[in-house]
Image (cartoon, helix red, strand yellow):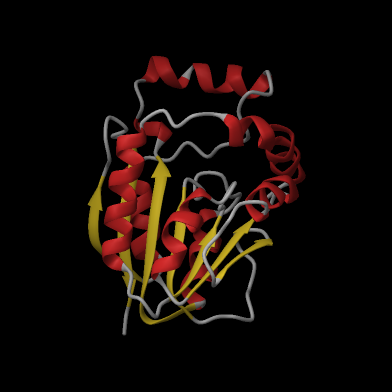
Length: 205
C-alpha cells in the first residue's frame, strides 16, 4: 500500500478502535462462518487485521494466527488486547512474504479493495498457501453501489474521511480471484451489507 494509505490508517486508528460495530449481528454471523471453514491445527495468516478483533475472536480455535497490518498504530492497538495463545500481531503490507508460510488459510477482510494491485496481492497470497489451502475474503464492491452513492466517495476522499479505494465490481473481483488460480467454493454477504462480498476460494491441492 502507499504512504497515503499508511498515513490515513495511522491517523484514524484510535477512532477506528473506539467506533462501535454498525452491525454486530452480521459480524458475529461472519465469525461463525469463518470458524466453520477452519481446523484446530491450522496455520492462518490474516492481512489487513486492523485493531485485531477477528484474530482475538478466532485465533484460539486454530494452531497459529499471524495477523498483519500496514499501520503501526493499528498493530499497536491490537497488541494491547488480550489475545489467545498462538496469535501474533505484526506490522507488514498485504503483499508481504512471510517465513511462516505455507499457511492453511489466509484471511483478507475488507482489504482487497484497498491494495494498489489486487491481482498481484492475490498471486502473492496464493504462493503462500499450502496445496488445498483456503483464501477467505470479504471485500467492498463499491462499483456495485447506486451511482448516486458513488458520487460521494471522491468527496469523502478529498476531505480525508476515506482512504484511496479501488471501486470494484463483484464480477471483476470474482474474475480476479479465479484468475489468480483459485476455485470459488462459497460466496455470500452478511446482514444488510450486500455489497460487502464474502468469498471462500481454494488453491488446488
